[in-house]
Image (cartoon, rainbow, N blue to C red; front, top):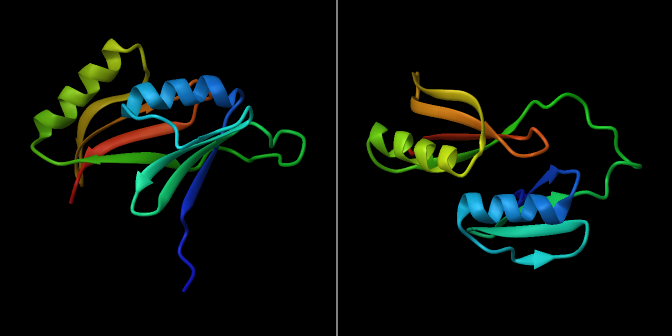
Length: 120
């Protein structure tokens, strides 16, 4: 059975977005070109930032989000929130308790959503 191995996020400026994600996730890109940058997420999965789609694809409304699942207690979620707020990240949804645990949502410079939630 084929298994997805890359998640592509459409961005306006791949290089600027790469700096944002490198700072946010404290990691360096695996591959960089002017309009396409990838990050190794582990387990053979990559996150790609692509700015070369505008003239070929008309994306619909944003219906997905990246999710960073953290181990530990709810305090770990709140601590991550405070670190990212200190970095100036745009907050979309403040930390709160959901059916799956403590969570919050931020956005990248293009409005792509990034959720932090507890690891199951």
